[in-house]
Length: 597
View 1 (cartoon, rainbow, N blue to C red):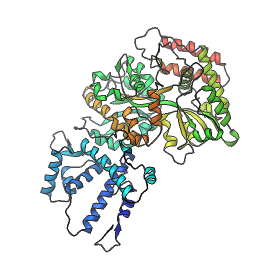
View 2: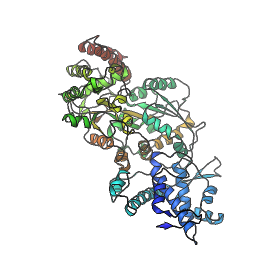
View 3: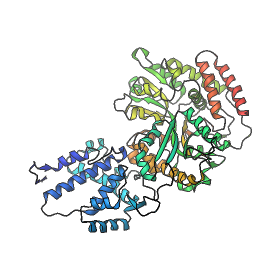
């Protein structure tokens, strides 16, 4: 099909329009779109160009005000821009009175929502409704599919570009884009958030403009390392009035912060059913509770897994390891320092990092670090009302865990004793490591970089088990909570922001822009999310097999101190200063003192 042009230029073919507009993020875009909105913008760009060409080609034509306003409205929504009624009427392409009448019809039909721009409520910004966004998501898939089928793109090529074919987009329920709140949040100076400086929270910062539009308020976000985040949270608690409206809390800190009164119990602030608790991974939702009450909403449910190079294992004829002995055998087989290759990387830096790794190694061998009550699938970490807790570090199984870490040294990089959260991922992403223990939130180091040798070649496993243990994926991550000393007038708006930031739509947006944590079952099952990484399907399967557990790091008030103690003693053991038995004995005695305090 050729379209005639009145400007004297060569005829334009439909394939040219498709090439120009379906292979680029969008046209007329004044801002870089989020990755989640790229396909929507591509279709908008195509429809804008196509209708323009039709209008030019035909002598008799009339604008479609409904389509023109929908295109403009959704483009602005995806790009994080607000738009007024007068601007939308101008985009209709019709006289003002006609455009105003068509806009009123779209408002009446529920396709467009109004949000007050000022306290007086006399002016409004316009936003697409949930119904309009749902319809547009379906249209986006159909346009891409029809373009591929009708204009010569093969099924294989389309699949590689993540087009929808046949019923593939019906495999799971697609979560629509986040919607704006009906009323802007009344927060003087904007919403203030304290978070951890990890990839997922940095994604939130990159999406700040989109979330500012969603809540109708400015967002100020501060990020710290894990130890500094803990310190700043306690320092903020000592202030008369909190500097923050929302605080990110590492799961093991829940008991400490709840006991000290750092956080408000959420059932005092909002209807918990609005959060849809059954949609969260069970371990993540349980980990947000203390004494049966929720003190946060899961923002990241990120189990620590064993990442392994599938291609290296296949070349060596190795099966994915399911036991600690198989991990050691694979590490020994693939360890080749002369070629710059090492068997395994893990958290071995002194203090908190190694303390975490030791606790998880204990779990691999079936040993909790406290005398937790056994239950189906593991141990009960709901210990808020227990007064009989004792450390269980210096045990035969604890010794096996310590010796396992010591054995890993032989097949680790030379700088392993300074490696922590990110240091273990960088060499793995660079193709120097065969296996690495790592949280799913760190997967973007190689999953988002096609130049990484580990890109597309990584398998995901729960922690392989010791002789007396079972495979376990120790759950880490963060919940978002509200500080107890927040000003009274900010509590309601902060609760609404909390609900918005942890909604399925918001969490899907994080994933589409680089995060690899999905606290909700609905997000992990979303077909668009599943196409981004196999990690979501793997984690969902572990959850259904009851391998996701948070008991390896029980959220007692003293957990941060005990973690640090274990990390110091085990580091001395790895350096050869003390024996494994002495490291366990010292950790046990120091942990007993910390627990009594």
